[in-house]
Length: 161
Image (cartoon, rainbow, N blue to C red; front, side, top):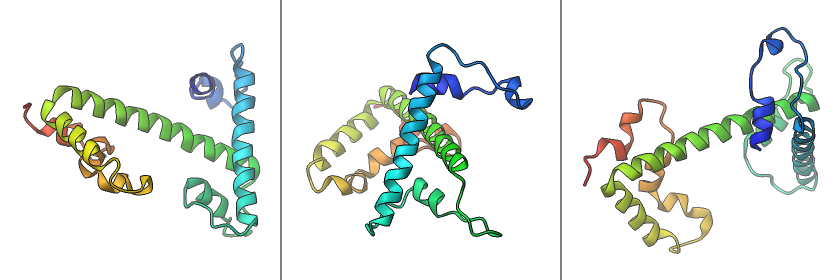
């Protein structure tokens, strides 16, 4: 995954000029693998929809449901794939940054780290895994990405214990 984002995730002057970029050694295989994986995921979702099973409500489903207002047509395959990759890349970076920041803040505050640990210990096996996030409000508050300043994170706002 890292190789893919290192290969495809950087903007170059060649991109701005619409020119092809050279792909680093081994990069083409990674790009092909990633493209194939995305295509297989999209295909599997389409088969699920065709079978009559209710699909999950996620970003891929929203992309598949989108229609051109003038033609009523869905997204072309290459546009669908590009959008899926964009969301994966954005989600990957956002998730990594959120978790890194949360772990850093927890390392700085024994009080909040103890609260998160106690909550997880108490709630982990207290119900089905599907509802675990709903049972962890403190943990969710610490991890949830913030749109505003990082200083509003609960672990950051508290005084160290």
